[in-house]
Each structure stands twice: as structure tokens, then as C-alpha cells.
Length: 254
Length: 139
Image (cartoon, rainbow over the protein chains, first blue to last red):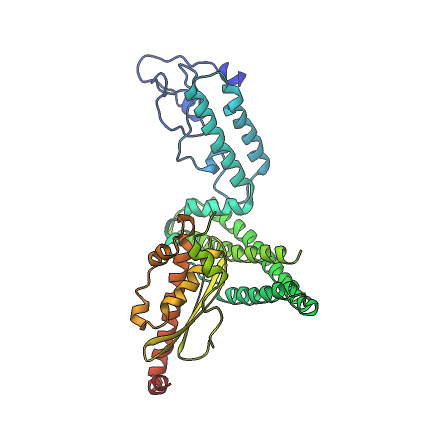
């Protein structure tokens, strides 16, 4: 915080002269190009150069650029963490106690955005789900393929689950044991399925990152990107079904 | 979150829970899932002379999903195939008084109805192509 306040106020030359240096220093886009308080152009990084009031971050800010990270699925977690702590210190509401209501609100909103961004990018599944939302584009409108075999398996498991619970409530120990065995076997199959899905997902992370490195946007490149996004989306929904079922099994088999 | 009385009633006394023979030519099966919540719904119809004479469901999901599919089977019985297509998720929402967060359950039920009808039609037209329409209709 102290460093921010002590930041040298760049003297403004007459007229329009805003040096490119000033703009590039700011990594996060702000909600507006004018200070909410003194109406002057915001020259500094997150704080107005004139009145030193904290500025709201843009609502369109994407979480990757929030931490200066490329839009890739394998991320530098150390950098994510460092950047998160750094920015948290800048916007932390504790530093704005005793300031105006608007400044407190801005600090709170910016901190909330940061926390949300950090939580999302830290978790690989949330990260890829977020990327899919960002990159949705054409892939969004193609209906995902429904995993029919998995649905059948889930419904069958559901039956065993009901048998198991009925047997338990009727005190039928042998039936309960039999159904319990089936469920434990099913859980093993599901755990294996989950591992396979997550392995493939990890492979797709690599594929996506390679594609993201190439800047040429020809047709094959676009098609490859869309194909990767689509496969990731299908894998993620399949994983949701698997996780949902595993959760139910866990609750039943305690 | 509080469920409406109708949802609780369908949940405690589900109508038409079970299965119909999947390979029967007069049976249409729809299995659909909601990737957002992991719910899975199976809905089956048995059609005779273009009228739905039986409907069954099996749902793996929350109370609202179970109630939506249970209600759907009640509504399907006695309708013609074309009439069945007119069932909309909004009708289910209204009947069960579903809150906004549970609307996707009714969408799932509508999807399941459509999938079952589609499956029945596919089977029926395949039978027609093989000259089996007479036997199907005679059943």
C-alpha cells in the first residue's frame, strides 16, 4: 500500500501527452478511462494519478489476464500465487478503512473479483470450465454427445442403491451385503472411469496449450481448437455424472 | 430450499416408476442427462394404435427431477403421439410450482419425452420399411 501511495505522480505535460509507459504499467483493465472522483484521465496503476483514489476494475476483465497469465490450461501456479498476493495487498479492504464509502466499495469489489479469479484458476477443473466459457464461440452451439452407456450404468446402479437401502431398512443383512458388494464393485468401475477421464483431460490441456501458442489462425487451427474444446466439454459433463454418482455411493456406503 | 407439496407428493409416491421392455417395437425409450447437475432420466412409452397406453420412468436425481418425470408419465398416458409432443416444460413448472433453480429439471423431463417419442417413431418407421407395420398395429 505504502508503495502505491508513494508512487511518483507523473507530471502531465500540456494537452494530450500521455506516455505509453504509463498505460503499459497497468496490467488490469479498469472500468473506465476517467477517474470516478476527480474526472481526470487515470494515469496510474489502479489509482488515479491526480487524486490517488482507487479505481474499479473492468467487469470484462478475464481471469487469465487478471494475473498476467496466457490463456493456457497448464499454468504457472507460483506466478498465480505471487500475483494474487501482490494484487490482494493493493486492493485489500483493510487498507481502506476510514476512506470514503466509494473507495471502500471499490476496494471490496476489486478484492472480490480477485478472489474469484484466484479460486477459479487454482483448481484445474474450474479453470478448464472457465476457459470453455471464455472460448465458447462456435463450439457452444454444437450439442454435446450424451454418454448413453454411462446413463445406463448409472440407472442400473441406482437400482442396486435402492435395493441396498431397502434391504438395510428391513434388516435383511444378507441382501444388504449382496447389494453392497455390487455397489462397491460399481464404485471401483466409476473410480477407474474418473481416472481415465481426468487423464485424457490432462492430455487435452497439453494439446490446447500447444494450439494456444500458435498465433496463425487458419482454418485447420480453428477446427483443431474447436475440436479440443468440444472434447473437453464432453469429458467434463461425463465427469459430472461420474462424480455425482460417486458422491451418492459414498453417502450410501459409509 | 422448500419443495412444493406436489413435488413432495410425487417424490414420496412416484407414479409409474419402472421399466418397459426396451426392445419391444411398440416401446419408445428416452434417456437424457443434465451435465450441469449430473441428473439422469429414463422415460419410456408404450404405443398402441398411435395412443400411449403406458409410460414408465426411472430418474437418478433430485426431488424435482423425480417429480417432473413422474408427472410427465401421468400426462403421457392416454395421449396420442402428436398430443404428447405438445407437453412443454413450462406446463410442468406451473403444475409443480418449481422455483427458478429447478426449471432445468422440467427441461430434462421435456427432453426425455421428446427422446422417447423420437425413439418410438424411429422404430415404427423402421418397421414400416420392413413391411411390419401391420403386425405392430395389430398388437
